[in-house]
Length: 331
Image (cartoon, rainbow, N blue to C red):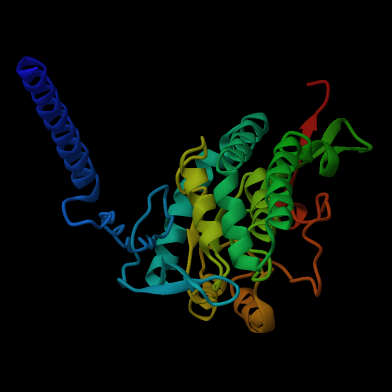
């Protein structure tokens, strides 16, 4: 009996010890899960990241210089939200752009029409490659929804392709052989005018810009463009697309800034051969008078242009000269 009692006591002690150990383990686990303090630890707060807003530069001679004045101005969405800063070009920047355009004119005009078409098509490819950025900037600039902005960008790409196709056909349409009563031939050939100053439309900062710029360079001219003053970002992004295409530096030069500051010196500049007043607004008549002093070709602004409509050659022929030459026959 005494042996049975001692065995029962030893079994009870071993059971008590095993229960105490299991309770201690469960307590330790619960303590580890609760962090010893009984409360759930909170993740650290995410750091607040400040927006990095770019200060966009000019596009002159194939490079992206700052304005020589060192100035810039804020660019906002159509409803006033801040987007970035853009260089505020000066009169000196406008003169530098004309010098770059004049330097590039000879080599660009000397290229074959077929080669110019290839390069313009390459520009369309580069715009297509940055489609998302153009859609976002067009929507911000014009207050459009995404679907409408995508339609605008698609039309801008198509417009480049349209004028790329015209480069080697312009001479056949507006030039030709003339009937002459004599022992010689008479031929008329269109030639580019030279440096064209283009004032981009304010209400259509991408499609309008492409619609006035592409016909100028398609026919062999070079251009100095004043981007839409309050929505210059599509033009600056277009400059980045041009710089990474095959377009030679100086063929297109893009200035951002005040129209009232940049347009008068371009209109009166003696080395500018033609002026597109598409974005001139109320100052068109004054600029036309300034252009008359140096006998520039001037394309007047339309009252309510439809930039989505195909323009044909209406924006090409004003910037062409016609050269007629006579060639003897039978000698």
